[in-house]
Picture 1: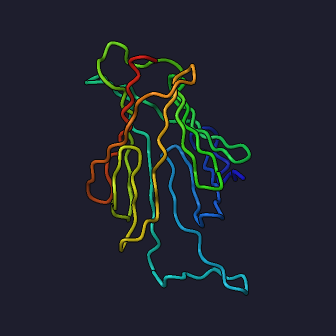
Picture 2: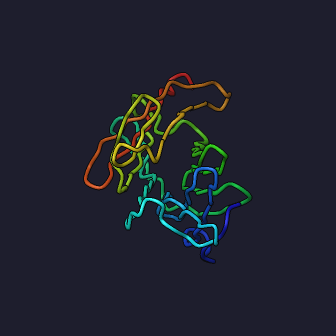
Picture 3: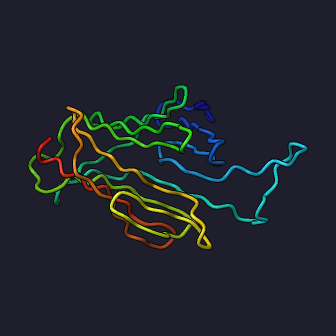
Length: 193
């Protein structure tokens, strides 16, 4: 269930989702969302770090822009809200970014009400910044896997993009690593949308 962490209004609000099946916590604010592991619980109900690692991992994402060619649109500072198992970040231009707590993990979605940057040419690019203590382990057309010591801990996967009519659009993920994270881009061919 989405839990409000701070009583701020709009962009000052902070929310959290707890995903027990995958043992991680997600927090949300106007600066994006972050994942971190839930501590293991002893039979006595106390938190313990199973791996004995003093520095638990973290993975953070912030939507930074929507672009097409050289044209870029500002996504603005979102208004953050939550209801049941979903946290929503409503942005300028009617752009909605949402996160749903599911048994398989946190599902991320973007709703863009109309085809943006129509004067630009090429694919639509949804860009975000990733900050993490994890390393990129693998990349594929529709997924990224992050972890440490060869163990996969975070999968950004199962990319699926649909237009307003419900038709699936060609898309792919790209990641450009940099110190302590990188730039994540979702490329969408919306020429027939």
